[in-house]
Length: 211
Image (cartoon, rainbow, N blue to C red; front, side, top):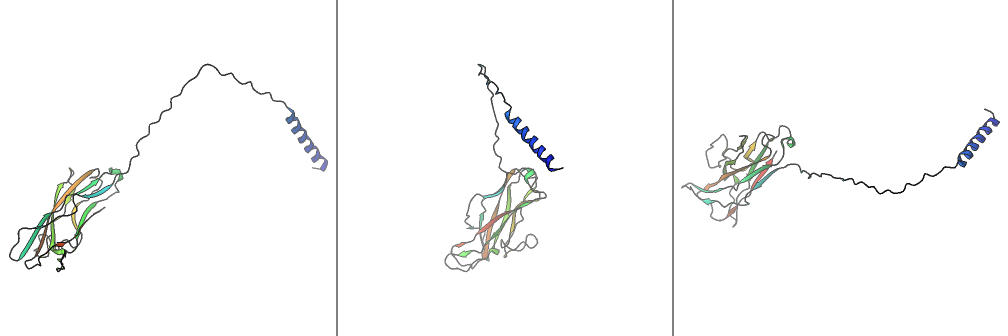
């Protein structure tokens, strides 16, 4: 393309632009408001936000006092009852992880004397769990009895006391028991040699829920 051709194209384009700019456009007439009107009702249903369910542990009390009962010439025994322990699962089965199981385990510290007495080891404290409400599935069960270091075992190697984490209550199928609550307590017993020093002693029994 030569130079003059380019100029003609540019000129034609300018003329076209000028022509377009000179065209008059008539504005539409504005409609007069009428007497008719219509209402539209707008509604919405807002559902309550649903919080996910939880698996939780609660204990009916924070202390228990042991009292002497059943002592012999060789062994002094002090007994009491663990406050009711409840496991509540508000989850739906769909919220439970696949193949999940839960358990409550307990362990105690040594009994420390208030007046500087020699401590009594946690091996002298035992328990016998009792299921109070296991639901209808039969899948929630209490743990086995744990006796003390002064006892002969009632189950293989269970005369260790509550030194380590011992089973209070459990299920092997969390999904099947979801959406309910389960409760358990335990008979507690402290067994010491007959010559144990007199005085007040304190131990802490820790209960933990695992899944």
